[in-house]
Length: 175
Image (cartoon, rainbow, N blue to C red; front, side, top):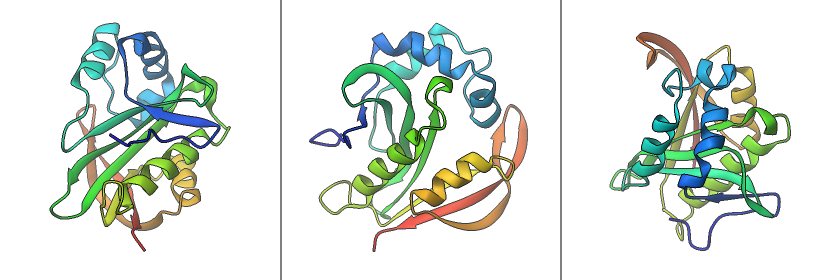
């Protein structure tokens, strides 16, 4: 876990808690969230409790994005997964709650967690990748604004609800 916790004065990143279950259900029941993520559908309180209970591991760090001045106000999610510290790489993903969209929340959270993950005093990774569907222009813009460089089209790169989908790979490396 980042120590001290990551924040930029507008948002803060923190572990998920049981108190977040209603916000998770509301966010993950949203049409856009369901369209571009692998959350179960319908998304139930039990799904949210399982997610919260899973916590972080050596390979995954799921974090709630909240208002910096109100840690109970969930704005979205950002998280690392497929982290392989021996290879210095990981993947990162994000979504924004419907009530927090178009405020730069995703870009702020992606920038914060990416910076910590690549920093030698943080996780010390060398390379982060993220994937966005070609039709998800908002996610692609977030990636670019956070400094990620668009790479190749990965044919059938993700499985979502029983169907393989193409994705664009975006990469950020430590400088």
